Amino acid sequence: MKSKASVCLILFAIWFMTSVHVLAAEAIILRSSVTPEEAWVGQKVVLHVDVLAKDGWAQLKKVADAEVRGAYLLRLETQGTRLSETIDGDNYTGQRYEFVLFAQREGEITVPPLPVDVEVKTWGAGADSRIHRLSTPLIEFVARTPPGAEGIRGLISTTSLTANQEWKPENDSPKVGDAIKRSITFRAEDVSGMAFTPLLHSKIENLGIYPGEPTVEDKFARGDLIGTRVETATYVFERPGETDIPGVVLTWWDVDAEELRRIELPGLSLQVAGSATAESMGFEQSAQQQNTRLLWSALLVVLIAAVIVLRFGGRAADRWIAWHKARSDSEAAYFRRIAQSARSGDQEAVLRDTMRWLDRINDDSRPAQLDRFMQQYGDAGGQEAAFDLTHSPAPDRDKSDIAMLIGGLTAARKRWQQAQRGRRRMTGLLPALNGGR
Image 1 (cartoon, rainbow, N blue to C red):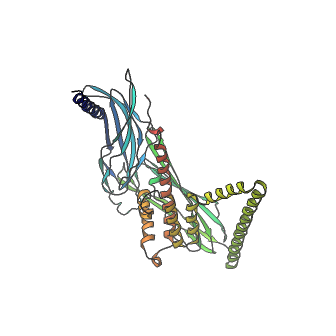
Image 2 (cartoon, rainbow, N blue to C red):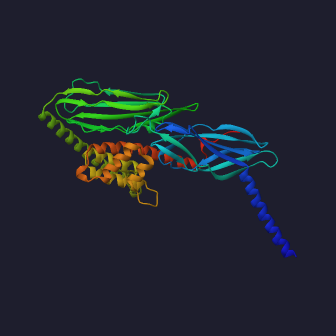
């Protein structure tokens, strides 16, 4: 009898624990919605995620990374909004969180379930705090291409967009060897700075073009988003004669007026002074100066190593060598080698160094692939450049594709770095997702 009683008691305990888990799960409401449900390609779509708890307080403590095919997802750096509702006579309290989506193609966009950790706090005599692992409901919205915008690369759809440029130095009479820097600033409402497609730099006769790393910034103010992207390029005059730097044209969709608008930033037409002899001497001198600097740098490294060995002994030298090796093996060092190969114009070297960099950062069980990386983190222009360079025969490749790839890679790297920082933050508390009582 005692044995049967023990078995019954164990079965009752299991049933009771299971029942409590089900009740606890039912006491949490997790829902999602999008605004608007039908949007233009490139337009901001807000993803609302609500979490409420019965007779308690619910908030998100962790949100896992998720990939949305055909769009990219951005979390707003804002605190959640407090919610309080009465459902079937019961009191529920919690918070609403907002994410933004930007469709990159037309059609139906599916936002998959997002794994989240929900913290529920209760008060009173039995006050406690528990973490529940749940997933947001799957949700969909439709993106449409604005009329007349078919084929526009990296379309931006917004209510306000501005673009301006600056030239430094202002030089109307450049000579061979002179350089001029062009800075272009794009700014738009309800658009992330990452949504702007990198500028394309086609080859210009008698001119060297060196794109800089773009600067991207997003500002949030009371739920409003303002995105800024600054593109820079340095032009070096290589030969005398008339040189034309083309203008930049940006076509965007005005959501309020429902019409395409066009912004044109004028280029420059300059007469470059100098001679072929002076040009040749200038470049030879520049190369000689660069070689001299490299030689002195190498000698300095050897001298420092020798001083460390003599002054501090082998252990300090080992530490310095280990530090120098770690620095040269860093992710940033691998990425710099891509830019160095790009300046040489060697496309095969660019692809080789790109794959080495991808292998360096790859933490997946699958081999690193440029196409897959650009699909996850790149924009339309970068994806196109990566595809052209990896799938076209070498003789058919245009050197201007290198600049497109470097620009796209630089933007994709920033998104990858942001995702890495997000993953590290999500291992602990997420300040932007924490709400107060």
